[in-house]
Length: 374
Image (cartoon, rainbow, N blue to C red):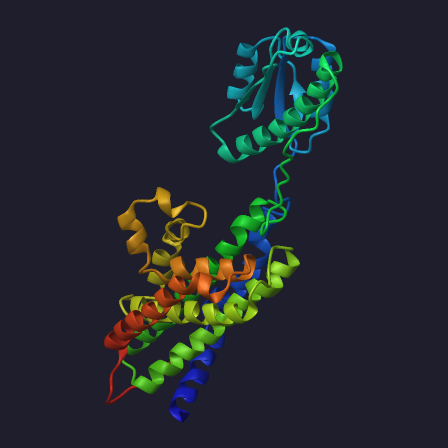
């Protein structure tokens, strides 16, 4: 035990004594906790430009325009005379959507017929187009209900709708992009900075010794504990302080987060030690890890559903600690999941700890000699 704790202290000392490791494993974690969420501070898009082609020119169409002016999601920036002109403006990137009000809309409503409206979006930017279309569609739905009540004054007494739909999001209560994406990216930031830090320190040690790295088992365990302590603090920092400052959903299952986060970091450390044993220099850690960040996030299937991914790719992605780790932390922290709900991911992480722990020991262990990082 004394040898393990000595190696742990030496590892933490090596991290604090290497400016590149400090910047990666501590500085980058803190910097990204403020820098990355800044792009999503508004959570939802607003005031997206909308074109309205009014071919009816009636009191009903003018009332509809007045309602659209009060939307947060969209603002009317022009009223082209025809659909062709509106489409040309949209293709130039000056608008995100088009609302076409056909001729005789008011007449059809007053005669009891179904009024028709055409809503078109710019498919080049799916996020913005989806938001402006959904916002305008909600306004049109509310307007249609009121128009139906007005029409019923001519046809008979108004009837209350048999069913009223009330939508309440359970977890992402703001329905914001930041609340949906940033928590998952935060786990990946900890994962990637930890891998780079381990790679940098192992690369430095390799250059100093001029040979393949070898550590005895207590030294290797102490190294893993040292790296794991730093990684777990970063993970809890994002799950707690950063989520609180940015007002993201948080605090769902704290004891579950501690268990899931410990397994996630343990798997990441073992994976990092194994991968780092192949790196010939400290610079290789930056090159390989940075290039893999975006693929790792998509392979986690947080923003891209697993059912839409190739089955073989989904299976292979389970060999990466980030896949199960991101899903575990997001579900436990943001979605108040129970341990039973994330049991498959927890078992996956435990299996990865054993797998990459054995591989790291095979690559780095040397029974008769060596020392820890110093």
